[in-house]
Image (cartoon, rainbow, N blue to C red; front, side, top):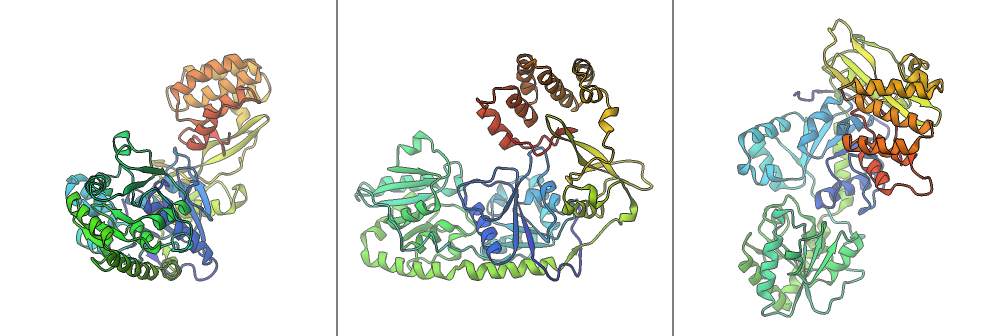
Length: 547
């Protein structure tokens, strides 16, 4: 593990390119904040790319470039050439640094490693401590979190608070109308820190005295045990629907035991909804008791119930909380915050990654014109300047008639005066330097010369005699050859066995589509291909695989 060392000057003009490396893109406040950053930074003049293993989500309107990296490939391997890399969780900081592409900044939004530090074992504490040491820059969304980062990990962190999307969360707009007034809560059942059971317990206490319902916005289907205790459940609603639910609610209730800078209470304030929240550190970043919110003790449904009853029954108090809440929400404005973040990234981009190698240390077999994309060659050179490897491989793309394009990992750079030690891959697709190379390989030559019976025998021999990960390659060619021989039923039977053996290799789902009926596409295989992406863990795979 190595720290990123930077020099200067770096980028001084031109359009800034920022990449956010994302661990997941599921519905939650932290992910939404990243998407807000991305859209608004792009609108402010930067180029932004989101990189994730997961499909582009549809629950939030993403207006930037989005790259889905195959699960077989390390997330950082999919980062394009850029000026700043934003690591959004500690588990991929090191990989982002090792890419050598650009200065790395860690965006800390808070989790158990900040707010429940004492529960971690010593091994995990030491590991996360080391992750915190390697990035040259760290920023977060609250002063509370910045204090913990310094206290626990010894790093100074810049603070850029979250903000509210005023086009969605505002007093003007549709209101959800219920049969009775309703309390509103937001959070998934599986996220224990959201305190959903505490809110339900408090609700069951107040409904004995008040004619009131409880609505629940959740990113996941709840268990029947909890669902049966609330009035209505909204799973994965659109942002506009969430706004209407805030506007219609009698009170928004937050039961979290820890947060960094929670958006739902602030969004509720922006929609003119009074707020009752626990005294978690994130809410206390902007919530002040009896001014813009009523604050109750964490894990205390009795105290929460009392606070709910007091707000619900006191119209003057409710109006005061609404007025002050609107003023608070107006203070957290994306326009100002995004400009500050953009300037921060510009300052980071003025640095360059300090090289540990020189290009003269390498024998490089390719040139820029050999790569499919110009920026891929730049990425390769940047990697060569920082890698500890002695051998570097890239995907070489071959086109064969009536076969999806295939990519083979081939060596393109060898460190001079080395013993040929560690091998590393760089996902920089290139055209083959030797276009007839496949004609020299057993099985391939016969297939290319349309001697399919011979090719089938040869691929079968290779498959039976191989115990490495290449076995999947020969399995794929067996099926391709059977399809070419019009032995589709046999191909389908083989595929069923191969899919059981290689359930996470998307190539076999593509083959099942090719072997099936064109008028009846295999919906399961289509979805599997979309999720898995290219089988880059294999020595050969279908390039840019699509259903």
